[in-house]
Image (cartoon, rainbow, N blue to C red; front, top):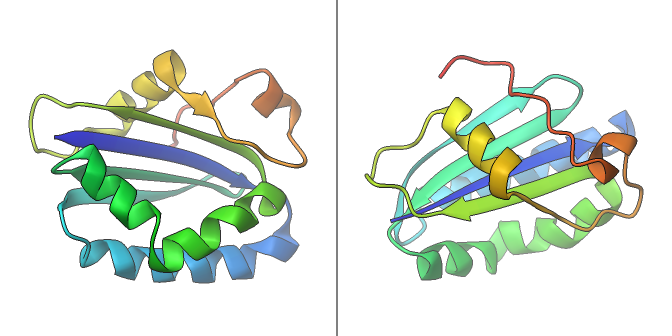
Length: 134
């Protein structure tokens, strides 16, 4: 099993409509992706978006990531986002982890993605907890 978490913050309202459209298209894509076992999407405070997905393998996740709408969206995030981070790990079960577990992995092992206009929090690796339940 392979879990993937992303945390993205859209830096301006002007990018939000296009970001939401790409998110919708990517969400439709993932539901049909080979090896996708489950996931969650969280719309958080201050234009922050989290994804949490579980896959049969890293290879399945990379195949999804590198194809279709998701692959078209990724290059745009460099300009659209001022915070972007991700983490991958091998969970013990096929159940989708909680947001708190995802957050803990992001804080301990997360990687920063390149953004053209990083916020102070991005540069400091400061990730606020997701405002949600489990």
